[in-house]
Image (tube, rainbow, N blue to C red):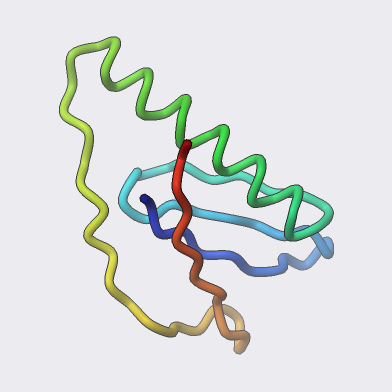
Length: 81
């Protein structure tokens, strides 16, 4: 299970980031599309690390709420199966 941050950008897209996997970011026109896209991005990120024999970072992001451009970020926990 990975925690992700979701917020709307200035172009009205939903952006989703996985803080425990540096640079793992995706987006979508809807929340559902963005979450589907980040799930795929996380799976690919982890597969690439494993293929290269690199350690997979643990999910240690514990924030409950945060601010981004005066908006609350939405935190989700998602299973990758």
